[in-house]
Each structure stands twice: as C-alpha cells, then as structure tokens.
Amino acid sequence: MAKILDGICSNTPILEGIDDWPRSASKKERFRLTRDLIQSVIADMDLDPDSLSQAEEASISAGLL
Image (cartoon, rainbow, N blue to C red; front, side, top):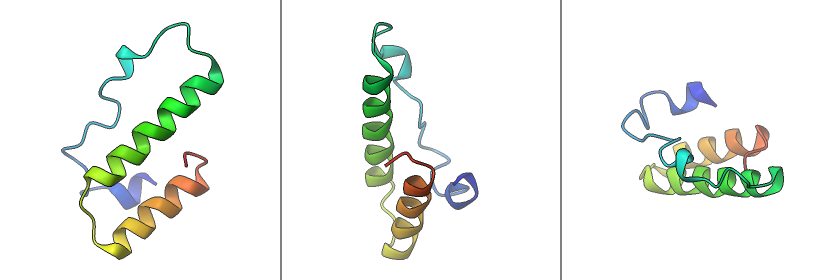
C-alpha cells in the first residue's frame, strides 16, 4: 500500500490524532478507529477514480477497510 500512496498523500499525516485515542480502547475499538481514519484519509486525498480504486483495493487487501 505504501507504494501506491507514495507521492499522493505526502502532506496527509495518516496517524495524526492517534494520541487522542483512549488508552482503554479495546482491540475492536482500535480497529474501528483505524478503519475510520484510513477511510477519512482516502476521502481527503482528492484522487482520480483510478488512483482512488487502487488506494481502496490496497487498503482492503491489507485488511484496513
């Protein structure tokens, strides 16, 4: 996935806000937060349809979406 996103989201800090997550969050809750974060980053990238499809496919194959 990193290769697909290289140069596309270099200005988008994917893990910004991770310190705001509650320390008591369960593994399931952290997964949901991660999934929501990845979805919002992809949505904010303003990609053309082909690049958007590649980013989504990479995220799905990595188990992030």
